[in-house]
Image (tube, rainbow, N blue to C red; front, side, top):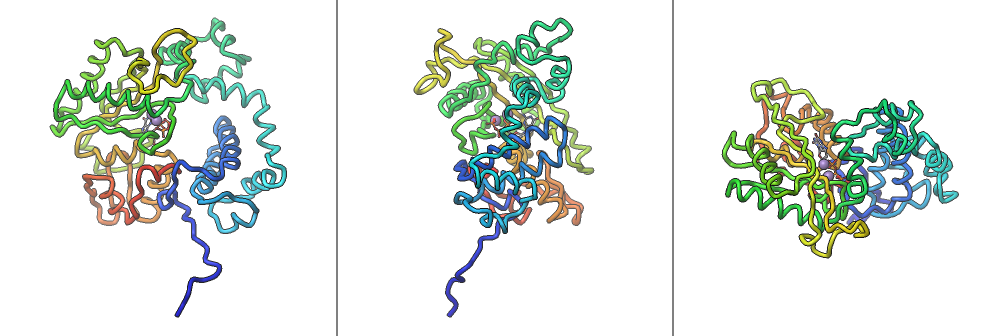
Length: 371
Ligand code: 8DG
Ligand code: MN
Ligand code: MN
């Protein structure tokens, strides 16, 4: 009889949606380094090189153990010459010279600082850098700069929202949103999504999906929730975007990065007394509350599974789900639909499991999507 082969090597898929990636990362020494370089390429708008480092990092995050020797990565996908060279330095010297150089680069440091402000993307950060601005006080005292409202709030609450949101804080916000939904409609559906659904310990915000079984009713849901939060006196900032979903346009699916659901990007005032174990920020400011970023998205109920899958992330997992659908199944997946180009039909789904099944993929639990 055949026993186990002595040199059986587990094949690692090139697609994140065929790997199970928990929050336990055995290779953060490499993936942290890759993230610095990926980010610097993102600042320079070199998307291909940025993606190469993000893909390599994602593969290493899925490994059950630490990479110790160069030969450990021999059979892994997405290990290019550049990523290998960075890993070689880390294996040999404990750090990468290229990464060290980047971390002490003034332009990288400044763009990193500016993009850490809510409402400031790489384009704005670069514009400010090219004006010679290097610090927040440079930006805030520069007369030629006009900050939009989002950026004004980003600076005003910088101390709070640049600090990670804890699980306990996310839970407290869940109760607040749930109470609001319950008061508006008893059959409202609320689900945690984003990083906290993937069981991350910390996040930069808290993401929720809300809907109702009554078609069309979801359109007034977010405005009603926002009104309630305002009346409670805890709404510090609200950027509401009404739905632009046009079902009649659905039979010509093409991939779009942004979805068309109603959504809002909020800053809420979270009372320390509502958080088990207290707020994660130091209380030296004296006030007993913390400003926290919250995202709400409100799809029609028949789009719920697609929206939930799309908003749970991680971004790398989402990218690879779509790439897998397109290249391996001739299907188009986005936050609204799944379209089979061979059969020329849309595939309906009540749950995420239905979508994985349509794609012929093993189901990956949310906590295994930290690619
Ligand atoms: P974090 O907040 O802990 O940093 O991580 P995260 O929860 O994974 O990231 P996120 O930036 O909050 O995004 C969560 C998911 O939402 C991510 O997979 C991308 C998805 N998403 C969309 N559309 C949009 C959109 O219009 N804006 C934002 N911010 N996220 C979107 O599908
Ligand atoms: Mn999030
Ligand atoms: Mn978010």
